[in-house]
Image (cartoon, rainbow, N blue to C red):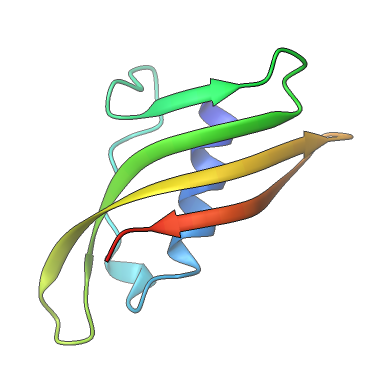
Length: 85
């Protein structure tokens, strides 16, 4: 689950105006700030959470996200990223 969380964060950062300002809850031992689900075969995962980041005016905003990931042959791929506005 930690790897799915980290990959979701990477995918979200790619879509932010100021990715270096991104602050996510940790993906460590406590994943309480995330909802993470997977198909029974663990091939498809969904990670829901939030990120605090700067908008184009420099104001910090909290945005919720849902990332759909696939895991195949040891590789993670973000196939959908939904970020609220």
